[in-house]
Length: 104
Image 1: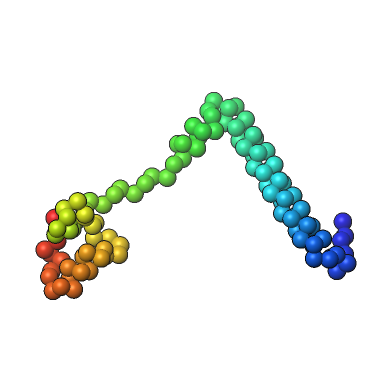
Image 2: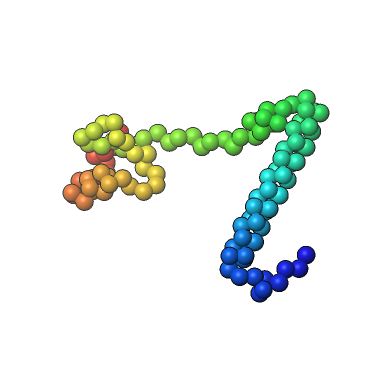
């Protein structure tokens, strides 16, 4: 299908763009549904549900590091020592105190 885009005015071009976007989204939705249906059938043929197979493939989450430092005034605030230093740690150091003072 050839469309002479130069012969269309702005409103026609915008409508065409909207129609193309809608067609692309519908196409992708159809393909996803087809793939899902095919995968569900294959999983059933092997005695599983697709959800069972996907749940078994979850990525292992990294173990949370234990806190190594505690806020000097609020013991519920801690930091593992990884990543960016919290503002309270920076303030502590800038006031001339040592990191070791915050260790748990």
